[in-house]
Picture 1 (tube, rainbow, N blue to C red):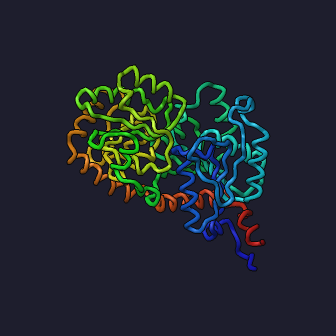
Picture 2 (spheres, rainbow, N blue to C red):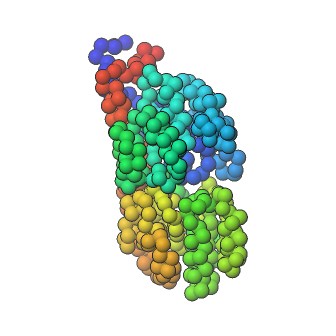
Picture 3 (cartoon, helix red, strand yellow):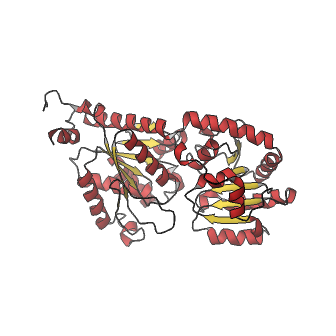
Length: 408
């Protein structure tokens, strides 16, 4: 065994060990991407493991494999609010880190970053790098001076690197926290292998009791306030005045489901709106629709826009967050100002009446997404950034984690 000449740049040579920390095994954007990224990194020869802080008891949960573990924390535990960290859950995370001995711990989402930070406090001499994947503007969810101070003073200083899913969200992190660590914009990506429809368009419409000739809008995502599905329901009501056969599918779950059902009823469109819950085979539903619509107030880079694009489905999306970085307005989709509901209705009506333009947008979107947002390419970008952060951190110190593997 040769140890002479071993140095920090050994991280450029070794396959990496990457621990992905995620809130729950739920089929939402951050969680699904972390899962797909781990799978692709394994295919590329790296060792990865998923760690979920909290259980998820709904249907269609992400599977656990390759040593993935559930820490079974309680998101509503009093310690989550004060002092902000549950010491029992932190201890379980530390055990998972110690057992896996990663080179990189990547935290995905707000709750995970605080646990990653406090784990690093407990492992001051540990060789692993803590990398935060940010998907949105922190000012949209971090309210109150005490929470802001908690993250600015105690959490963010522990980071060794930050990935932003869009240039806009990455700049928001810089401005909001004022941290100075390696940062990189790496967009969301999709796995083409997971987007092969298993059922036909007609079969899916029959399954959901949707007429085969009905103009069909689709939304996929969480039923939460920032998605502004109240706006989407009003849009459906307006479009239906011109297209009486219109139908709308909502794929997903969330705290606003009953409120949205009541709104659909009060708008007189309950019979054309299908609340279809979380689905593992999203491609089947996208393939059966005529137009994807997203009316959010805030977004990073929504994975479902990329999924729709890869399937050749035209999209109409509000111009927020990193959306303009993944939808080329008028070329691969149509962007509309989020407060212009009248314009949204006009654009949707025009596209539903113009199948040729929908096909043109979908064709260009498929090419654009396939060339820029596939998981194999993006995973390579992550590996490059991991190695950059590790060499940056260990330039003046031995690469302890890799050395331990050399000695084993």
